[in-house]
Amino acid sequence: MAPKKKERQVEGDEVIRVPLPDRSQGQLFGVIEQALGAGWMDVRCEDGKIRRCRIPGKLRRRMWMRVGDVVIVQPWSVQSDKRGDIVYRYTKTQVDWLLRKGKISQDFLSGGEALL
Image (cartoon, rainbow, N blue to C red; front, side, top):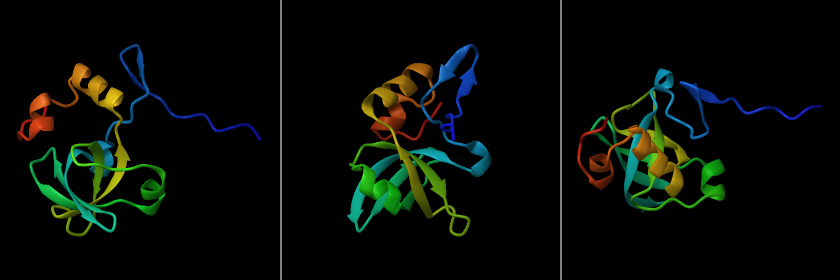
C-alpha cells in the first residue's frame, strides 16, 4: 500500500506548506493568553473574542503549548463565542512566514485587535 500524499495548498505559483485555518469550518487564528491547567488555555482569537480552548489529547501528548504561541482554533458548535479546540500550533519559523505573507499582523501578536 502506497503512503498517502499530503494535500498542499497553492497560492499563485507557490506551494504553501504552512497549514492555514479552514474558513469553511469556522477556524480562526489565535494567540494563547493564559494557561489554565488540565489541558485548557485562554486564547485571544482574531475576531477579538477570548475563548477558553481545550487541547485535545492527541496534541497534548505531542507538543507543548506556551503563552504567546500562535494557534489555529476550532470554535465549538455550542457556545461558539466562548469555547473551542486548539487544532494546530505554529512554530517560530511558521509565524515569521505568516507575518511576511501578511496572513497575521505584528499588532495581533502583541495584543492588538487588528488582523489583516
